[in-house]
Picture 1 (cartoon, rainbow, N blue to C red):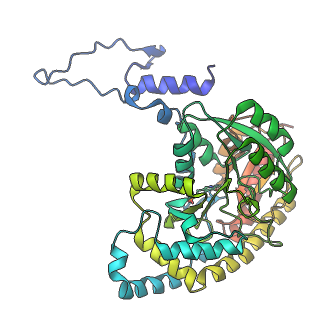
Picture 2 (picture 1 turned 30 degrees about the horizontal axis):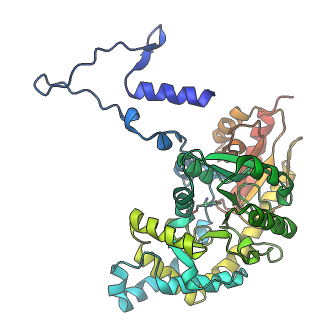
Picture 3 (picture 1 turned 180 degrees about the vertical axis):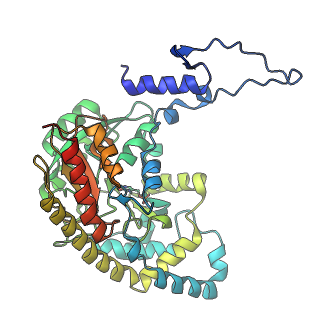
Length: 444
Ligand code: PMP
């Protein structure tokens, strides 16, 4: 099966290896270069054909969407709804500074030492405490600290996926996960979601047909859709997992950031049989640069993760773990998250009001009850590929929906709008400009 991106990639690889090129007036041509034998004496060394050496699993994923978003977000003259970054004005800088200087006085040796592969034990205790608030009962030994939950996704791929294996994901889902599973050689199959989350009625046929190694789900305030899986669907999903003996990978970066009532318990809290591998992170509740996340799972899975952790980078950075642990123990974490809930609820409402105010025909959205994103449906007759350029000309960036589907474009006309990073004033102006761009880019 040859699609456009395969052809483009093949072309890029040939070009990089110097085998094709452009010639004025001829377009793309195969270059008949005489490949000289390497000879130091002649002073000529053949260029190294990198693309022939790269392992196919890695080169097969050539998009750099996360890197691209990180590059645009943060520039002063851009209003960014693109990334999934906390509000910089709410970073707990003063408290972190105090804790840091206390640590330098009291724990200075420890701060500079290595820590256990599974993570700093007191931090694993603090995480047990936080998990209890999410209704998950887990001992410190049930958790391994990771360099962000992104590392958990990578380890899942390395523990479970052999090239050709299948993974089921929600459609749409977090693009980082699609990228990671795919680069391990997985076939990534999408299962549809609706307002109650994963369509468990469709899922069973997919399980029978594709025999996946695991199911990846974001049940609470999903990225990108903002949808939360209903309690009934959660039980149905668990029952399917038990019936077909499949692990569930539950990714929960946003669960604590609820803006209405307390959310439905995580799958991990409902699972009495150890089938759920639970990932979470401090990236969305504290700051992205911390790079601390964790996995809570069955001992067999944790042993594999610990083995990979040791091989990959030994352990998570010790100062980050000590700083975070002190921050939680002093009660600062809970206070901080309470502030975030208030502020992000206000920013969400601001964005919802702006969408209503500047609305154009054919657009629609749902109100997320928590998390970071509004998943906004644009008019069907929009020129999708022109919208990104038209909006960025006006200084607004966002993520187009197709990035979140395992099959790429799909004709999707959603955009993911993050409301935590931009200031309330920027949210108002940004939505106004974005919807002007939508109007201008829609064929009438
Ligand atoms: N999973 C999901 C669903 C995410 O949205 C993100 C961050 N965008 C991650 C995992 C990775 O987060 P981190 O590695 O910073 O913990």
